[in-house]
Length: 405
Image 1 (spheres, helix red, strand yellow):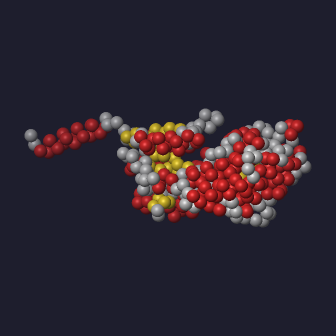
Image 2 (cartoon, helix red, strand yellow; image 1 turned 180 degrees about the horizontal axis):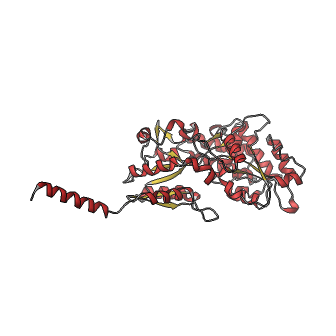
Image 3 (cartoon, one colour; image 1 turned 90 degrees about the vertical axis):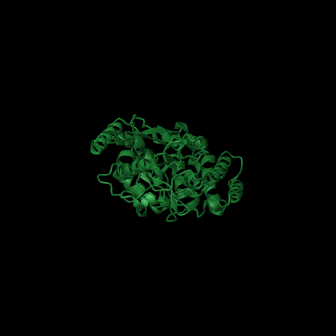
């Protein structure tokens, strides 16, 4: 048979087999859940969009509850049953990078026409960098601020155009707004014994000049004593030790808290409230003093065990290219400077963008989970009256120092 005919037949067979080949499936795990209205979460939306335009690579997204995230990931990595792409909390980025279970993305990012590492906010770039290599790509950025019920401000004789400018003013405002007869607390926040407690506490410690590796310094003690005072004086519910950030926000939406410390991601859930609300920067310890806020969110990382790292990176590039949608569609801030046209909630966007300028990620540290547990114990034992703030933080400091900090 003529060689040209053979070659043509072979190409035809290859084309036919490719046409009927099963597409590659990428497994993606993360915390993007459906909203209360049933709208899919951000990563699910991106997966659906990708799947609609790609026949050769399909993305299957699986939701994992926040509290179960690390245990699910650890089990999956140990058994080789994990996804191609993990969504990793910024508090845990260096933990996973240090364990050698992720694909080093440095060279892929350097060659990318979509992802430019130099434009990522420094705090977020630091969070995804370990041993001078980049291991994840930031998905979005978050920070926290003070939401307040304007109606309750007016009822209490407070000026909603003049929110608290110091810790003492925050205390005074919250005390004025507290109404035990109507079961209304002045301020809600999360002191839960998971990452959310330290996430909300560390801005206060840092505003007082204290870091996690010297948490028992006077500033850290003052910060925890301030939280303790709010609870002991009945201005904040004792349930803050079990409140998630979502729980705290729910009490605000229900009118059971006049103010709440909460993040920008909750803005979509604030639409349609029965009252008017305002937003303010977290007040510093003293008026005009150092401002600090939390900074975080999640990153996309590729498992070292993935059989399709190139395809996985292509999907990550697609998600990164959509960050101009973060604010208007998902209430999330981008982790790099991107202009937002016709910003939804324009005043909130301006406020949270300003607050993010003072944002700091937790850690970063490969052993942050252990650091966080030490902080959680200190917060819990103080707010439940088991120990005073200094004793609790002295113990936490000793545990953190033993971890190598």
